[in-house]
Structure formats: C-alpha cells, structure tokens
Length: 523
Image (cartoon, rainbow, N blue to C red):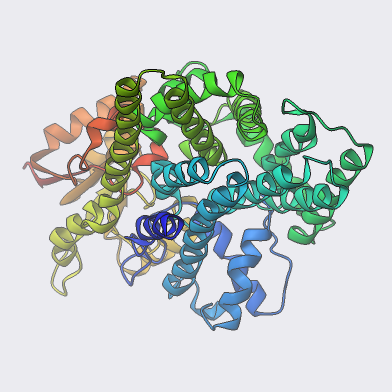
C-alpha cells in the first residue's frame, strides 16, 4: 500500500499540467526550446527514414517517442510541418512522465533488499523531488536517462554482492541505454564497476569487470544504431564544444561551475529542507558501509565534478543526480534516528525527518502550479493579438529578437533561429506586423511599433552584465512609450522553501517568464 501510494503521488505530480505550452494555432512550437529537436526526427520515421540525423543527444529517447507516435498516427504529414505538432509533443511528455514515475518504483526496488522502510522513504523523496517533478513535464532526455541509470543502480545492487557476471552485463546494458539517451550518463560505469567493493564485505571478480563494459557497449548500440552515420561524430563534438565554450548569457561572469551548481542549482532543485537531508546523508554514507549509499555518494561527486567544469550550467544537468541524492537524504534521516539514544529525542528527530518530507512535497507542489495556471505569454497575447491582427488593423508589435519560446506568440513561427527563415517569409507575406529591433535604439526610434514585448528571460542577463546596448535600449523604451503592463504569475506557493526566482537557473523559469508590454508610443 505504501509503495502504491508513493508511485501514485509521483504520477499525480508528473502528469499534472502536462499540456503546458503545447503548440497551438497561434504558436507552432512549444514553450520549451529543446523539445522540437528531439521530436522532429519522428517526421522522418513516418517517411521510412530511421536515421534521426540529429546526434547532439543520444537517440534512444527519440526512438521511444517516434516509433509509437508513428504507429498511433500522431506524426503530422511533412507538408504540414510545423503545424499540428501538439499530439507529438504530448506523446513525448507522456513517455517522459511515465519514465519519471517508473524511476520512483525502480529506486524502491533497488533499496528494498536493504530495508523496505528505507526504500519507501527514498522513493517517497524522489516522488516529491522538485527538479525531477518539473523536468518530468518535458519531452527531453534528462528524466529518461535517469530512469536507465536508476535501473542500472538496481541491477548493480542485486548482482554486485556476488559479482555475478550476468547481472553485471545487465547493469552495463542499462548504463549503455542511459548513455544512448544522454551521453554523459556513461560516467555511471564507474560506480557500477566499483559496486562489488563499495561495502564492508567487498567481493572481487574479473568476470564482473568484463561483463559491465560489454553490456554497456551493447546497450549503447541498441539505443544509437546509427553511430556510423556521418552526422554522428559532428553532433557529439558540437555538444562537447557547447559545454566547454558556453555561450548562454546567464552563465557569463557567474563564477565557478561547481559553486554555481551547489549554491544555486541544488537548493533550487531540491528546496532547503531536502538539502539539509542530503547533507546528513553525506555524513551517513561515510559512517555506514552500505553499498547503496556509497555508490550514490560516488556518483554524485563524480558527476558534479564533471558538469561543474563546463561553462553551461542549466539546472536540468542535475537531474541524473536526483535519485541518488534522495538515497543519501533518506540514509541521513534513518541514520540520525538510529544514532539518537533517548526515546524522546528519537521521536523529535523522526518528526523533523517527517517535516522534511512534508515541506519538500509542498515546495514541489508549488513548482507544479505554473504548469496549470494561465501562462503569461498567452494572457499577454490575448490582450494584444486581436488589436494587431484584426482585419482593419495596421498596428505592429515589436520584439528584440526573432520570436522564441519566451515571447508571447506574436508569430506562429516561435522557435528562434530554428524557425527564423519561416518567420521572415511569414512576416513579409503578412505585411510586416512584427518588428525585430535587436538591441538597437535607432531601430526602435525608426519603427516605433504600437506594442512592444520584452521578456525577462532575454533582458535580465544583459542588464546584470551591464551591456551598454541593452541598457540604452531599455531606457529608450521608457522614453518612447507612455504606458507599460507586466504579465506574470507571481510567486509559486511555498516558494520560500527554495532560493527564489533571482537565484534560479534560467531553465527553471521556462514556465513563468515575466513579460513587460510597452504601449502608447509618444508623439
């Protein structure tokens, strides 16, 4: 009953608001900027071309979404692209949410041999884990890769006690499937290989160390069958170069990557109560010779060391750590109760552990709210759109950049650079109702569109960095327009349990941009 309740809560949080930002007739692309790249290969699958031609990420998730979508007729005809993508997007999100929920069950199964109570606590924490809940709403690779990692964790704990070669091969197979979803998941090979010696009773076997890499290679080839395609290596190298060189303004002048993840990413991802539980869990992992906690600690430290060296620091990069941080937190809570001698103190400590669970659940539920509340982009466009696109209207609307996910749907072609040629053709055919100014004061003064939208997801970092062009442009907006209105959802419930909007990495804010409308140009 407890396990069923935990899985039920996990599913409820992950499926609530799953239709957020789906494509409509007003915007052909969703409000998540990465989804289209993972879903577009499905159009080729429908035409019989099984090479995704996109290898920036592993291709297993692309197939997991694309194959059933083709069979169910959810893929629009190529001639209609990019219209009618909503069913394909929703299919991808459903698969992500299912795998996210399945990860909770897999974590319980991995730990129940050690203790059913411990397993239920860790699985419950993952069910409520804010970052895992949030990213389970997206048709992206982070949650699916984490499912395969958790399955590898389960198989490792079962097989490593006797260094069973068969189980080692299966654990390696799961790691290979994870790497075929998100390449850096291959790092999990290290804790899997070391699993037999990460306990008070180490067990060594040469067969284990041969079986794990062999299984991993097979799993990777299953998930990435086109590794010999000419696009494969350039795709992988592009992603490596992107991580090394960066380019996202939010991470410019942001200090050390490791400090950024620890000080900003993890508190936002977990909430303050669960962070305290994890800190206790690190102490417990050192004190208690349990294979599960030591594997978890090793993975967290190894993975954090790698992603902290990158220039890009999106919060989604932390998702593969979430089940293992929940293992550490649960271990820390159990350890604190066990080391407390006095009965009254033990009751108090147990109550504090329960409070961590409750507060984490409240923080997570608050982060789901933006997915079910009206989106600021849609609300803003309902006010302005009819004034721009009515039959008699000659009004124009301005934006700084080619319409993208953080703008109201001023054009149906809202995928930034990806849809820029389609947008430009559409805008010309429509008579130029959308003015793209860049951060150029002269362009604004010369065009003076009737309405101008500015999203904080595009303006906050230029302002933080003191970019002269952006500062001058925003000052000019104040001069050109008499009035302004801000569209935002307000603070999510229980947001005080985390660092808040100011400290959140940019992808945490995808569902809740702050949109400022400038209107009433001065004569």
